[in-house]
Amino acid sequence: MDDGQRLAAYDAFAAGVRLELERTSGRMDELRAAGQVKTATYRQLFANRATLRDIDRRLAERGL
Picture 1 (cartoon, rainbow, N blue to C red):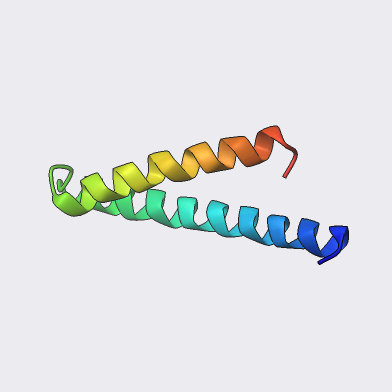
Picture 2 (picture 1 turned 90 degrees about the vertical axis):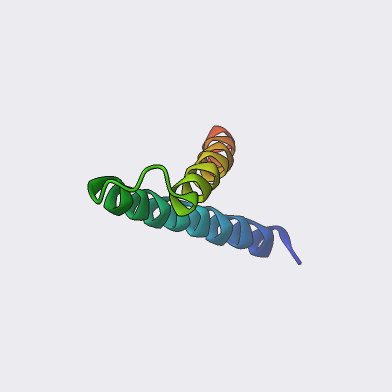
């Protein structure tokens, strides 16, 4: 894998993380609107969102 391919793979990874973060946040908004913030699903999404935000922050720090 050359540098160009590696960068393209990182860019695809970053885009995937950001898409998943957006979908997770959207699903959390739906559950919040339905008053389901104490459900196991909401809590799992909350943890996933925290992880995705951290990954996104790290990617952004490196210009990806």
